[in-house]
Image (tube, rainbow, N blue to C red; front, side, top):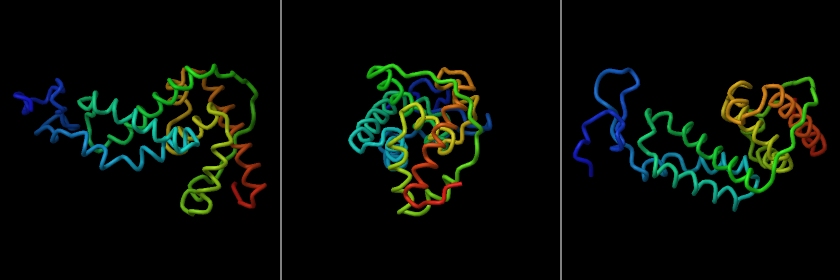
Length: 191
């Protein structure tokens, strides 16, 4: 495919420098490998962002089309899922910007923990979580997904979304309040 397949400069052949800076570069990833390894996780992430199966499918397809064009940007194959999540998130944000402007809020609310991890393990609770996430406004859902499912910090989320940290914190707090109300109304014990 590429005459320079043994180069490790990331020049479009799919190779990248090894994470340690020494030794041989990792084997080039193919789009088929990326799809086979990450399709399910990318779809779940897209579904959590959009709340709709059809939109999640579209977003997943968009992400893999971008991945196909920019496969050489995956420097560390073991971190391909994080790179793909960023691609999905960027596609989601771009589609939302085209649809409608977002409303900025500045209400400060005390942030408390919510047991999202415990909900994610039980299939019944997972359905409840998915329904609750669907009810959130896009900007709140996105912050919840980035904070709890991507483990990004407030600062990282603020940078990705282009908003102040206080806005991230207030959106997360509002989202958690809505999630708590939803879980309480449906008999779950979210903390």
